Length: 327
Image (cartoon, rainbow, N blue to C red; front, top):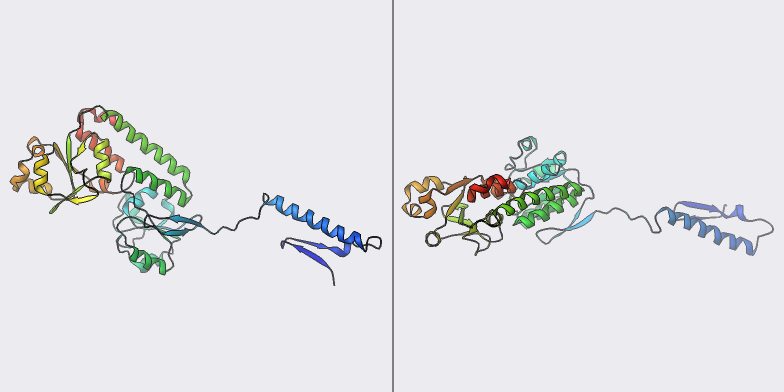
C-alpha cells in the first residue's frame, strides 16, 4: 500500500518516492516536513494568505429591526410597493423584477410584470409561484404578513424611509442589496443636485404659510418628519402642521386659526368640490386669493425619484417668479 499525505484536500505527496536507501532513517522525516511546509505555502499564496471564505449571503438590518440574510446577487425580485418599483427601474433593475403590486403603475412598462395583489396583503400563493430570491417591502406591511412569507421560504426585507434623507439612504441600501452601488450613487448625486438647485432659488425668498390636504373627510395632513414637510420647507414655504409628527388629523378650527397663504391638496380627494359647498373653507385666505392647488398624489406620496418632480412643482407654486431657475 502506498504511503502518502493529503494536504487540504488539494495536494497528495507520495512519501515512498522520497525514501532512498541512504536517507531511510532521519532524512525521510526532514524531507516530509519540508515538502509539507512547501505545499502549504503554495496553497496559502494562492488565496492571499488566508482560506477562501464560502459565500453565505449578507445580513441586512431592515426597517422593522429584523436581521435578514440576503442572497449575494438577487436575480428574481418582487416589489411590494409602487415607490420601490419606480426606484428599481431608476436603478436599471427592471429585468430582475418578476412581481409587483396592483398599485405599481409607473413607469407604464411595469404593467407587463405579474401582479401579486396589494402591498399590505399580497397573495401568498402568487408570490411563491414566482419563486423570488428576494421580496422588497415598504411601510404599511405588517410583521405578521412578513412572517407568513418567511414561513413559506421567502426572503423579505422591509424599508421605510419617511423623509428625503431617508430616501437617499434607501437608494443606497437598494444599491448595496442588488449590487448596483454605482447606479445608486449616481442617482443620489443627480437627485441632490435637483434639491440643491431648488434650495438655492428659494433661500432668500419670503416663506408663505402652507397647508397640505392628504384627505379631507376627515381632514388629514402631513406634519414634521414627512416627505411633504421636507418638500414644503425646501420649496420655500412654511408648513403650518410641522409642529406635529407624521400624518395626522387636523381640526378645521386649527386650520381657520392658522389661515394659511397656500393650500395644496391631493388630487385623490374631493377637496375642490367641497370648497363650493362649505362656507368655512371659503373663509380661508388661500381660498379667497385663489392659492389652492391640486398635486398628483402618486408623485407626492411615493418614496421614489419622482418626489423631486413634486419638489420642483411645489417650488413653482409657492414661488412662481423663481420656478424657471429651480429647474
